[in-house]
Length: 527
Image (tube, rainbow, N blue to C red; front, side):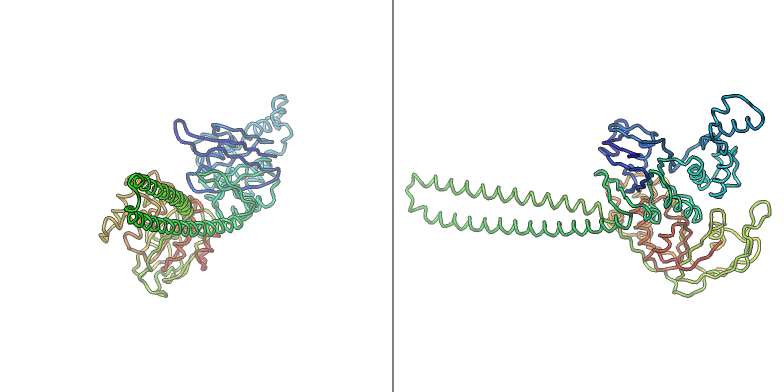
């Protein structure tokens, strides 16, 4: 086996365990996906396997050195070559080509005479030819940093690969290159991801939950089918337990009634019993009644506990349903007319090689498509009037719009969850109704005082959609700018269902082909 994880646990100092007793194996040349809700410890588990964190218990064995691609990278102070761990080889290669005969340089270079050429080929493959090996890694964009990591796969050809959300910040072209790598790689790979298109290419799915790790022997579609069957089975168990509880209660009631009738007959017959036996008979009847009552109460309590456990599991599996009202503008009204526009940043170079012209009508669902740097976000700002073009014109009919970016910045405020919900209560809903909607959005009472600044991407998304329902101010146009980047799979399903049910004009910038397809964004503006 290439990766063997045996009974590992991890907890922060003086805190509860993040996960406990996790065991699994990944065979040579096998690929597995690791999924689960935010906060269950997926990234932590990957860091433990990568040696970035030390497990509290258990052991990890890798048959080869690993190559780890983290989700986020802080300030490194390194050049690109140092970050890729090739700087010493490149320096030795340069020294040798300049005539050095030091053995140290030959030992460092080993057999990697083509190291510089491999770096250049890998950079060209991932669209990084404009980046030099001596450039400062910290100055790169999020997408460029991820692609530097991915280029390292071609440079080092590792046999054990650990990836944490590798498609975040990648445009569609880069995603396709990664998908091709996954389809053809000969290595042992663990991938944490919420990218359904990527998960569909991986034949083993592992799900991490607060209860532990469960392995499904199939891709994401197989996993989804099994989860649906498990949900249906759980619902049937709840139905059967509810039926059993009703029957137990009915039996207990009938038994009490029979016992009360016997007691009544006994009272009428007491006069016929000699005085010395009367008390004995009375005590015996009371004892029998008490035992029967205790027995039935125990059965009822056991059934209630089973039913409570089943319902708790059902709540944990349940997914939030958020319904938004329809937009107020009828379909077919022209909202935006764009004629021959272009834009320039400093330097006077036009953003697009050809001027853009198009119209947007109410009710349309439009996918704005293009590689990173093609001007998608700039186009949105031109459409909404936040920027003005340097040439051409944009005419707009009156309409309201809501812009959601991948960080959900509207929620990134120094308020508690309840305070923010009350801020959006512009229609003066009763307090209990606001709190009811928070509960429906999976924000129970014990988190109402939690600061919005510490919420995860999925929590921000849920809270914003909840606040939108509370305000009841549904926009005529909904604009989504890479909304799925920081969401777990549960949050992705919530967002997908909500946007699918939205009846208004939709503009979406996304490299997630699954999400775009599911929300029905059929018209494409390609940059």
